[in-house]
Length: 562
Image 1 (spheres, helix red, strand yellow):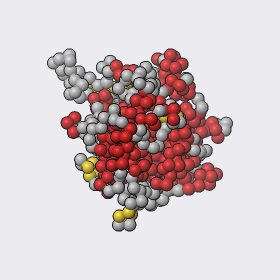
Image 2 (tube, rainbow, N blue to C red; image 1 turned 135 degrees about the vertical axis):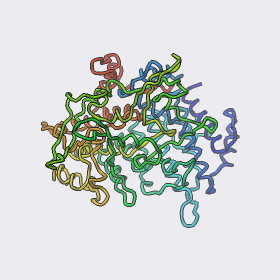
Image 3 (cartoon, rainbow, N blue to C red; image 1 turned 60 degrees about the vertical axis):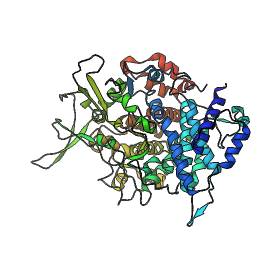
Image 4 (cartoon, helix red, strand yellow; image 1 turned 30 degrees about the vertical axis):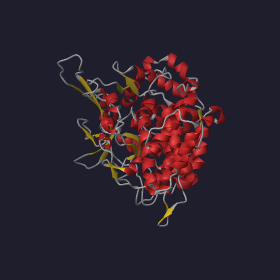
């Protein structure tokens, strides 16, 4: 059977079982499918909860692979000798259609469910003066847009449809256009724009999780779509308005891993704590997963990035040499106050400092997140070297954090022509005094309300430069600057490289890296940017020329769809 047609048939089955709650065979006739549709209109308030939870259940199926496909194909993660062959094929760009992480049907199952809800929900139904389905409709439209974006990032050009396909005669892929990521972005920018101010449903706590964390903020997703579409100022506007919306502001925060004094003897760390729970302010969106197989779909990312009992403590993925080199190349700056004179001075960490581990050189975020320990083992079947990746201590799968969004805001600002403002996100933090001090009058005037941050909600106490989360007092580091360059375009390229580096330092292992490289390469119209990064995965001295040649053709970035 044609693979794409099989995707549609599989998605139809998932749609019917999700909403009907009973098994419906894929061999049913067209008339049987039509009868089902007639009997399953969404026109009662209870339908909203059941439908939304059914779609979240489908999201669980793609949760792990969305992280692994985005992470393993980048340059920041290296697989160990204990990694299974399926993971190795992903990392080596050799995954075929038989790889369990390469199954587009599961994404189309989400899309089919979303399409069905959107087509059949009575969006005019009113109760006590408000539209019963409007909140869930906004959520489900974001799920559909996010899922299509995942498909395009992973497969390049994909069949596109926005109506539920319930008749086999309509399951011919030739009937539908095939959209690439820019076309998908353009469609959903228009589709989601009317919902930017729609409140999301509040179901309270579900399985001890705040259900508001299940949702993708509309403005954040619109910002992402605009970035992919090359609409940079619009992207910056959506991100800015998300941060600053009255009653729900999101400062960048100041959590960090840092040295406690100029002696560089002890690390104070409140950075890793961001990943210990699912209720932290930094966390915006997660896919809730089950904690026991008996209850449903669990995440197994812990078994990839950590030593666990289930993998006999043989972790499968760790930080790469490229990530090590980038982290250790950062300059750590510390503002020190002399206890006698009370005068401040900036101390830069140097190579003369004796470090207990190489991870303590440069930026401290990798040291904060990755921990190794020796545990004596009486059997060779159980590893005596144990790794913990503190980003994977939760049972749930994180899609968005506030820091992700600020880095994309910087990316958008920079490409919109505001490199000073973009760099200020990294070095200083955007609050009133810093904006006036470090961004030229000309750039401030041109940026306009993109640099409007309330002095009451954004200040020194809650708005630090993101680079300071691991590299000390970045605002005082005189080596971390935009140099004098020949043109504004040169400055934009320089700042974009710094943003790309900061994305690596801040979001390594979180499943974003390959897509970030892909997007920046598209900004530059230069596939070799991505190719060179990934080919350096094993360190600059071990550049993989064959991988570079392969990825220099962007057709090889994508998984085979059939």
